[in-house]
Image 1 (cartoon, rainbow, N blue to C red):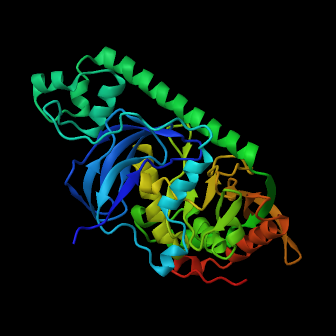
Image 2 (image 1 turned 90 degrees about the horizontal axis):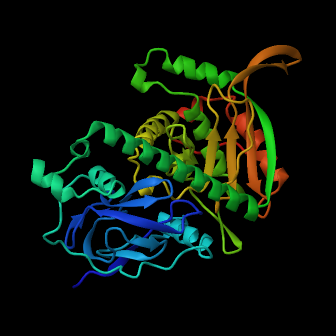
Length: 408
């Protein structure tokens, strides 16, 4: 029996994204691919992103050509296989496809029409074997890859393109400047959309992290560097487990209604070469312990700064955490990433004199800020969340176990 077909669509990388440009196909028609395989490279307003698939499938048809500018939600390939699972449990969650659909609706008013020449693509004699990075650089520098094949053979790599050092350096600087400008414009678009469409309310609460800091130090004492945990990891665990119990802060607001999520796909801010932020997503974050979360964020930060995070780790978030780090400001107010409904901002750790059990003591503290959507929750819900977060980190041991049970 013939297996059913379904389409792979241009996903949305942020609510401000209306279109994406197909830079390269990494597969051809008839190829079998596995879940997580990268099939294409997409240029977005935050740079070139690898598009990976969420299932084992076969590439039935390629419906878009390289260099096509394609509207979010438009089919770019037809897949032949079982399609996404629809088990009872999965139907209760907000899968990435649904998130991408919601993103597409957010930008529909400003989106451009789909590419008119989005037709099936097949291999031909003009195809040049080259790495994705080389093909991308050749495109933006208007270089003919065929000329490089004649000189040095295939495959063409990025280093093969640097034949004239001075000119290459000048073009690289221009490329980096362009990428930074695109990043700033993307952030500006997202913030503008958020502030214009989401009625924010803001709360802050001082978190006493003395016990948590002590536990982290004890945990790291005899560990090699690669197994040590930073304070950010247990903080993300605590936040994720609380979000699982506070659905009004965890989900998406689309088409005039709130869609809560039964799982926590937690996005966290990563600074990219000082030019802006991206938000890698930790899926099912409420199920992980601090050591696992540490491994995930270490990998994601490294890959983000190399520009190698796949699309599946850059979309689908149900809530965000932003932090200024250990050398930043003591307090910050963050802007919600639409169509999410809340974001938690963590200031830098510092010492402060607090009254503890009737005595004045110096404690390690972090000021946590919550920005939330007033259409979905109110100050009582937000204040309860921040109070419970402070309570949860006073006994940090359970954050190192894979359990999402917390005391209400």
